[in-house]
Image (cartoon, rainbow, N blue to C red; front, side, top):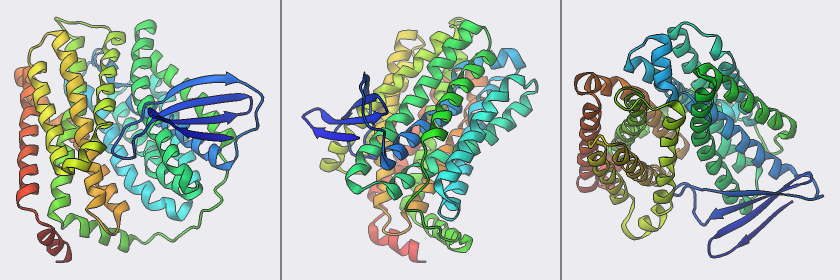
Length: 446
């Protein structure tokens, strides 16, 4: 059964699974402008099993954890990959970039097919395929094959981000949808952070990245087995034929709009800088003079929770000042964070990455909302393009920043990302002062 009650701190949600009562405290933060951080405890009791809506919610949340578990586990292990395969810094960062490039492609594919094929079916196929690749990763000895498999893995793992929220919208009552999406967003955060922490710890204990891959794969299989056991068939799914011509027309219409183009470029530069800052930071801290082990490197990703706090403030800020200035402030915070990162002292770097995460998630929350509010029709395709530029920027960022790293080391990365942030601020100024609603609508109708 599910119970919900409100208080001054948040929404208390209780899920019951057979004899286990699972309690969550969700902050009062509406999706998508806020990030959720659940507090979880278990209480043994004899209770009724979950019904259809609850099973769908739990299944999607578990798939989300599995997805981000398998997507980001390699990031704290980049120094180990460099040493084991004898590759450059760019080669190491490609292990992340190739997967994110695959996610961008997969989002377009799965989002387009889910209405015709069925969301649950694609969710199972994509998640199973993605975690299977992690299982065979320890056997790979050629790095080109490793990168190719990571790209395929990213494409498959895009199934959950593509169909998760639409599936909840199909199967849940409106009164349950907001809490369910809250669980889903929390699962994204839990999966992405815990994968890096667990992989870094396991690599330090096992002495190799292969041991981390095996642990991640085994944990993923355990969670996915639960999904296979509890995931019910869709009750309200009505297949609609896929029309490629209409799909391409909607994408073309969005790409003619100056406002959306600017937002797409901005988020591409923001996320491309943000995620690759972490990748090059792992390489820098794993080398002399720091030479930190992977277990310590993985702790750097706890700084992501700075973004949880800042994103929780985005909604209230938007009500008073609007989304455009919110994006600008987020970028400005990221630019200020680079002042700490340039210092080179480990403590300053930790503070800088907390500030960096705070700025990114604050700006990202506003940019994502602004895309949705800028479209009266075809919002799904507009958000799909947003995701494509989001992950495309992350994959391209490694190629753009690596020459800076080769020439000036860590200082070059700080300089390169600062340049990107300044460009973003210039684009925001154009968005604010020159792109009127009338001009944007005229370009879209052309």
